[in-house]
Each structure stands twice: as C-alpha cells, then as structure tokens.
Length: 117
Picture 1 (cartoon, one colour):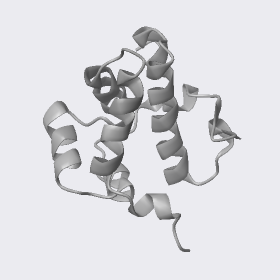
Picture 2 (cartoon, helix red, strand yellow):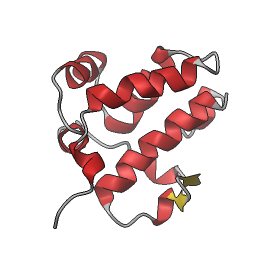
Picture 3 (cartoon, helix red, strand yellow):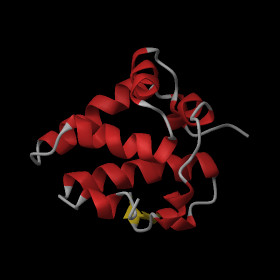
Picture 4 (tube, helix red, strand yellow):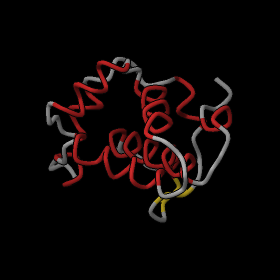
C-alpha cells in the first residue's frame, strides 16, 4: 500500500510551521513541544534530534518511545475529518498532533489539552 505523501514529509519541516501557528496567537514553542512530547513520549533531547535529523513523519512516529495511552481521548475535527474516526493509525497520530497544536493555538488550558495528565 502506498502511503500518503504527508508520511514522507520531514518532521523538521513541519515543526516550525506548528510554532509559527501558535506564536501568531501569543503561545510558545515550549507549549508546542510539550504537547508533542506528551503525545509521543519523546524527551526534550529526542524531540530536538527528530527536528534536526530530517526523519519523516512516518519515522518520527515509528521511533516514538510510546504513544500516550490518553491519545484516544483526543476528539474533534481536523481538516474536515473527525480524528477519532480515522482508520489509518499513522494518519490518526499525525492528526492527533495537528489537533493538539490547534488547541494550543486556540488558547485552551494546557491541563485540558493534555487530557488531564
């Protein structure tokens, strides 16, 4: 099965776009990094390596230490599709990350974004 073209995009090229999005709404890179680490289990150094080494989104999630068990609590619509109804596990994880960053940009409280963790 051929993967979606987003799977081959580098995480390092997408991360700055997330940061720009939230900074326009007076939020910070630290908040973006916090939600991504919460979702994926990367520590700060691991996340920095993932940004720097050019790994694809597919590799980023494949090499993630552990998807947060509360990720299934992420619901809502992203790109016109309900994230909880996405069948492809990799696409669902990418959309979870998109949804978390959107919630940061919208000004949601971090405790709510991190699903009470």
